[in-house]
Image 1 (tube, rainbow, N blue to C red):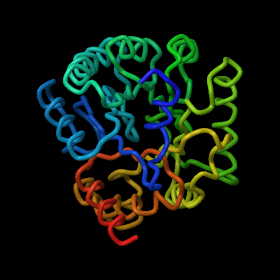
Image 2: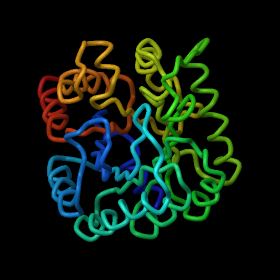
Image 3: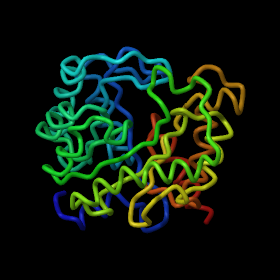
Length: 280
């Protein structure tokens, strides 16, 4: 998948307007959705195969929780959690896109060497070495907006105009990539739902759809699956109760121009989109 045409095929939404699906593989003991925590390479690989069989175009492998209030782990521990999983998934599923969910340039580099294809950076180049890694490997990158850090991001986040401010910040970071020679078509933007945002911020960003993109050539990713916003919106305090809300937002993704949707429940989202296609 090194050619631009191939990346365009899986970074951009399908010809029928439905988004690509990115399945979440959490190799962590403390991810916010307890049912998504994986404790071994075998568990991760079994879930990866199940997700791909149900339509996942991407698998997002992460070794550090970035839920609100989460404590940081060391780079060595994060790498130890993810690298064997990346290698196992690459060997078993050679055609799926593998995303490494990390804020650290050292982990991104090691994962790319192990077979990952895309860096999903929730800090949007917060590590000063990440730009160098992206340029060196020429890999696609997802830039997510976050106000603050996981340990403090929900301590009264504030915006004047959340859509304009998120677009401006993503544009500042994306410009670093463009100036370094990275094609905008290799850059994905994620508004960062729940990352330094209250409910009204989240709903404004979702309503804006592609309005947060600083460059229309960039792709748009949503990561809404089972997030805290459904506690505020629906009163669903436990993440196990938030699938219906997640699917409700996912149903709006095609009309909002979303290219990739990052989900815990690939099979349920595949059923949703199959049902929507049937009545269009």
